[in-house]
Image 1 (spheres, rainbow, N blue to C red):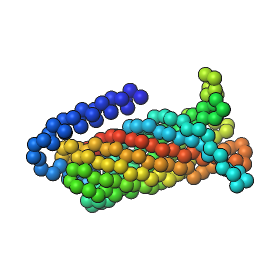
Image 2 (image 1 turned 60 degrees about the horizontal axis):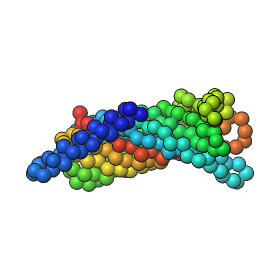
Image 3 (image 1 turned 90 degrees about the horizontal axis):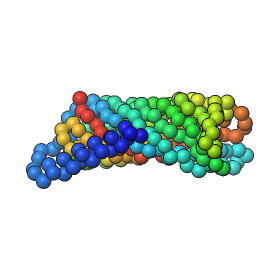
Image 4 (image 1 turned 180 degrees about the vertical axis):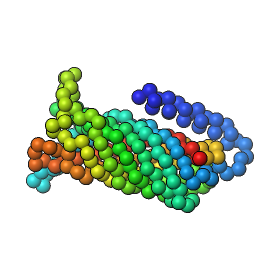
Length: 209
């Protein structure tokens, strides 16, 4: 969480300097690089859905941390391939119990971007592979393992969109939101189909190489 706070403060500092610089005429600052790297940090809002006999129920949301990094390989001015590595806290809440399902994820995203040289809208989507590194439940301050109840591997689909603001040549501030849904059944012990549904709200920076 300290990393997220520091990252956000860094973004605000860069934005403040960019606002001062905007008062003077400046050339276009769109990235000229075909390869970019960067980081993302933000929050996850996740719940579990249960389906059986044609009925679907869902837990309340668990709010957690999401952060990671990416490499973006540009095909042309508008399209790129962007693999990411993310740490995401998922789970759900119900009847005083919090299910903690924390994952390492590999989104493999195709991204499109359109706009001016300084400000662009982006949209992206693709598959995501997840591996749980924490499967536990917490109730009344007591924690217990959920490894016997939940699977550790998942494959899902992720879609989202946002904005890129180029504050300097090959340097952009990022803001995006995305929705991820798991495809595989995560329940080990019953005939109830269990999946994780997650919203991510992210900010970050991109650096051209």
